[in-house]
Length: 314
Image (tube, rainbow, N blue to C red; front, side, top):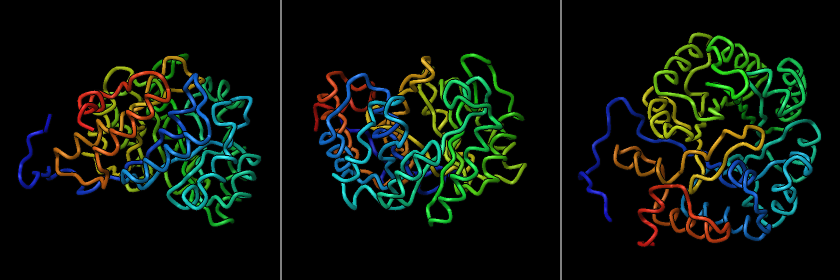
């Protein structure tokens, strides 16, 4: 079914003309799948995402294989991808200096660290307090910057925590400020269990702006537990955010927070932004075909409504 289009699409005056989609399906999506894909399928997935026009793709994680066995083949995947798996727009997650060493040895020059706004999740995910985790990140960021790498800082549990409940905005802002003071280039606000609402998003962005962290340095990462991921992303975009995380086909979750469901589906985000006249540079038809292909490899249908609506047309 074709979506009715205005010619040309009518952009909202409050929205940016273009949004960068930070595709997390190959890392955050696949790390939560029970089935471990062969490395050849992972490489094919990254290549298909690239061919669909996704400029930024988080490729894998250099977490210890015993913690995330789904991504234990990080070195092999990057070797398979060659130059396509490296570069400023091919970040990898590094939890500590050991992970950074593995990434730098392969010529990676774009990395992400993963912190927490809450003590309980910091303990469960990193086996450290928030203070201890920031101390752990300090040499990672410094060494990455010395090597010329771009550094993204994820902060999880920015809107709610399954153990601690509501997370005060002041607490989130304090952790974000301290992590950004390490020298990170970009801050990503994680709604790890999908409890955020548009008003909460706006209030947090305003509070971060008050301490000097502007929307030009912020990305957003929403999960769709309550069906709010798209609404929250549009609220952030309306505030001036131009980097939005999503996963092809709505893959993902979080292995350390069982209430976390899939990420915002990239296809659903593109459908909405296309209708608003906001450019993404992504070919929706090719991306839907990619997610249909991956669903076949995983043996289950995609949770993305746009993928399911368009699947028969690709």
